[in-house]
Image (cartoon, rainbow, N blue to C red; front, side):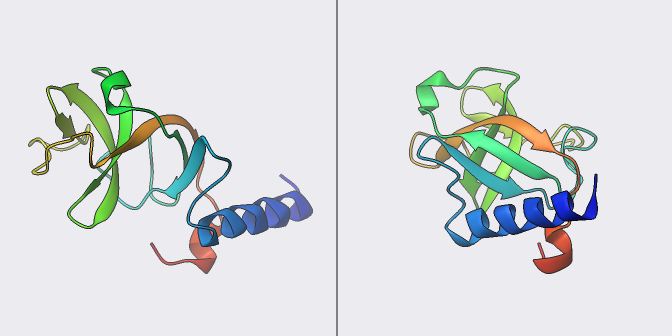
Length: 119
């Protein structure tokens, strides 16, 4: 990827993140920060997720929910349970309608956003 394209992508992502993560009304962005979902999501990968209803969540999907004061992108196991694919234990916070944010639609490989924003 050329330097100009990388720079423009970085600026665009930063603008979205500074705007509360809103890409458009339906989609939001996040940035990976741990290894619980590698190789699917790596630290500093850009996560694009769709705001949809909790009732639409299906077992095996990667979902985003708010847990313990942060956004979490993990595999949905069904019955309000999520788990990082590299974790032995299920997440300590149950997924519910009130903390569910949406389903991951795409993951863009490691972004230069992490050079600017510490995650």
